[in-house]
Image (cartoon, rainbow, N blue to C red; front, top):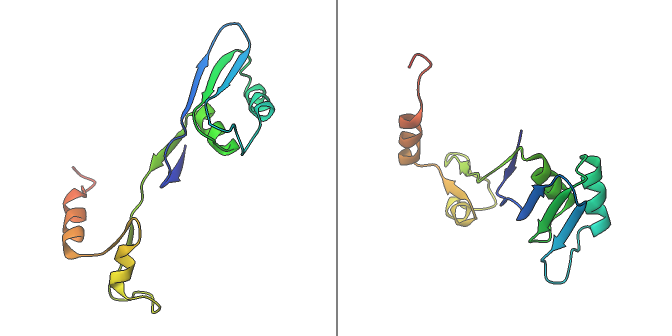
Length: 122
């Protein structure tokens, strides 16, 4: 099991079949740029998938294809929290909060985190 932070799951459709070989359909305008169709077929052979229908709806990398085949990755958003006591010297705290997925720590956030925690005996 692994995590992919701040990424969306790849738009890959996989359906195994009992016969008929591997069919790879690419619906990406302009084709794949990060890997070729022969690479996709070799990866399917490595995972012992010999009869399947595979639809690639986006230009994905080899790692994303492997994640879709294994199906054990979780895609989560993360939040970076900065303490206001010691922000980096090169940028003021209000500039840190303007960055994507970054929020300054406030008492309201700490109170919410405290409410959501459970003790071990409950």
